[in-house]
Image (tube, rainbow, N blue to C red; front, side):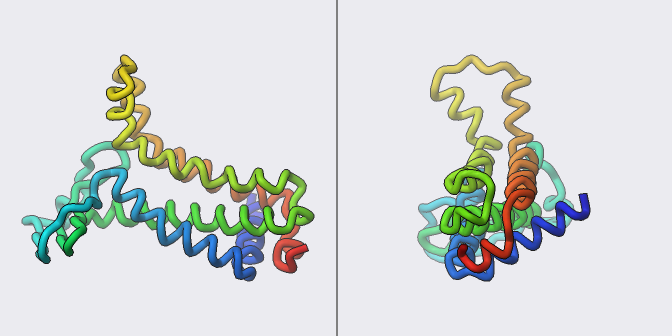
Length: 191
């Protein structure tokens, strides 16, 4: 396992040495936290003016879960036109996932741009980032099921709470899988 982790890290580093890999990483790592926070309802449009409101006992409330893998906000920050509910642990989850999304995108772009670098189809790497987009199901999944009229059971609704760790595992597994067959030297040199 240690060898697979080293190989994955080597593949990501090789992808990040390329300009297109760095660009893909920055787009994924920079954009994903915004999408994640919006999907769990902690980032929205409609704020007016500027204000900061911090709750009483922010440390105690920061570790209080609102649902699986989601935590209570400790501050409300308004900077027109945005409203941000700040939850340090949710921000940490968003940053971990965004790093994985960025790494997957960097490797996917590098493999796609240099197909000889990998034993899989060049476009297969682009699918590696798709699971991250499913993380929004943590809070929005039940609403989508309701809107579509699907009679979901309590067990199915509970499963949506575990979309976040499942996404992290799929993203990490995707990196390990691509790194297993990728040639980091070919990725780095574009050949």
